[in-house]
Length: 448
Image (tube, rainbow, N blue to C red; front, side, top):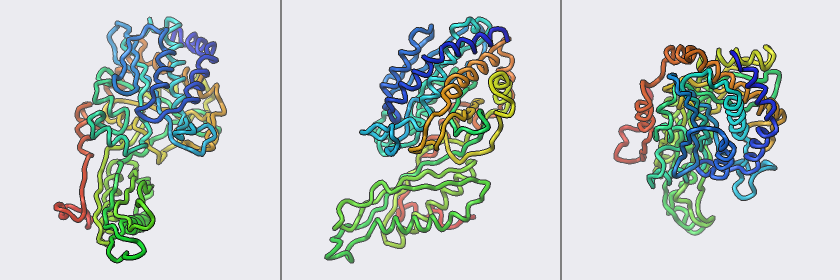
């Protein structure tokens, strides 16, 4: 389309300032719902642009909107503000252990670069509808106890930023969503991949305290109950179907208080991940049974709390075709591919339940995501080509009365008919049960 090349050139010319924003964010990592400094950096970077701002009043989050004043759908370019915790990374914050070994700083800078390209070249005069630039908190599902407390206080409704902001109406005028994410470098520079969904579980074993040396026979060891339950869980791993891509990876967050007292309060956290909702639910069933079995064996009680995690993520086929056509001008044909499925999770999956979304993966890092080895090694691909991809895709979708975007929206078959239906389903995932307890008949001891 007319002007797209100018947009790419404008992004290229601004490479230094785009990269500078990404690196500035990298140097001050913050975890979810606490990204105040990061949000200020983003706000300052976007300040020169003629956009309509919307800001969260009680935690970080920005939505900056260009309204073309011509009828058409709303497209959101979405990035994430938060860092992950990886204390072993050399660039981790010495106090919090936070580090952008997740690539979210790349997302934000690429979104800024796309905005710069679209807003400084006049190409938006050819577009219809709205373009939203959204920097959202808390993609990483970490610090669960802290977020549960915020929910108990009524300050949050969900653990993740996207679900929280869907509830607050931030996606009411969004019809399509464009995102990006980093991946390890290789022959493929830009890839498309589906993701697991996940359910979050918080488990508490309760026993009876006693002197560990003088009278252990008078206690009920909650830590041993947890160990027994984990052994049972590990024993059923081979029963999961390979195609379901199930992942269970619990951690003990509290193992006791002092060494000379039998532990009576032991806590676990885990995700139950799977390729689809059926796989997640089946794995959760077996996990609960293992936890109840561990408690039964030691005479302890166990409380299992389910919390909404993220829905499985699949790139929309129509949006993928548009992005691939844009990539033809940016990378060689052999440098882009569909690479199948990954067992990680992203709350971008929540958005796919009611609108079309893509999240191409950019091969610009060495090492592993969330690992101490993580490094960005191709800044031009990470920040500049990615910004060009976002800008070019948005332009193609909204050009010519937004015909391409309208076709994709009409063809989309959402899991839920509306955002309200999605939120209703998400709220239904909150559940707490205790074994043994009054609802013992509902515990999953036998599969159908």
